[in-house]
Length: 168
Image 1 (cartoon, rainbow, N blue to C red):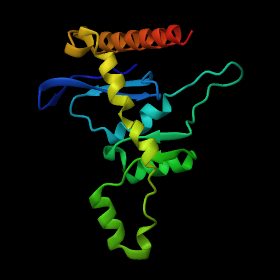
Image 2 (cartoon, helix red, strand yellow; image 1 turned 180 degrees about the horizontal axis):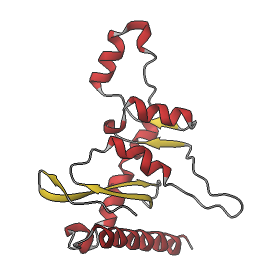
Image 3 (cartoon, one colour; image 1 turned 60 degrees about the vertical axis):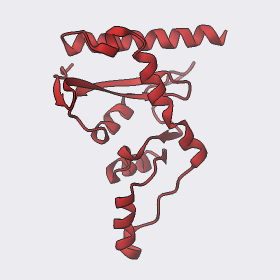
C-alpha cells in the first residue's frame, strides 16, 4: 500500500479523506490523500474501490446512481460514469455550462439533473461526521498515514456493525 503523506493546506499540514457512502451514511470506500489533493481526480479511484457483497455471486461494483456536488462535474468523471452505465446526479458548474452553450450545437446536450436524488448528496458529509465522532480521527493524532487509515477502517466497521444491529 502506498503511504499518503501529509500535505500543505490552508490549515497547515493535513490529510484529506475521500469516501463513498451509501444512503444510510455507511462508508463503502475510503481513500486518504495529502491535504492539497483536489477532490475531482480522486472520484474514479474511490468509485473503483466500491464492492457490495451479495449472498451469492460476485460483489457488485456498479451502483445505479452516483450523487456528488459540483466539484465532481468534470468531463472525465461524467465520461467514466457514462461508460459504466451509472446515472450521474451531479450538477453542472456555471462556467462549464457557459462553455458548452458558447460552442453551440457542437457543445453537446445540457446535463440532466434529478433534484430528488441530488438531495441525498449530503450523505457523504454525514458519513464523514460519523467517522469524526472518534476524537483520534477528528484531530488526527496518528503520526503515520497507515495508522490513521487503519483507524478510519476500524471506525467504518463499527458504523456498519451498529447499523446492522439496529436493523434487527
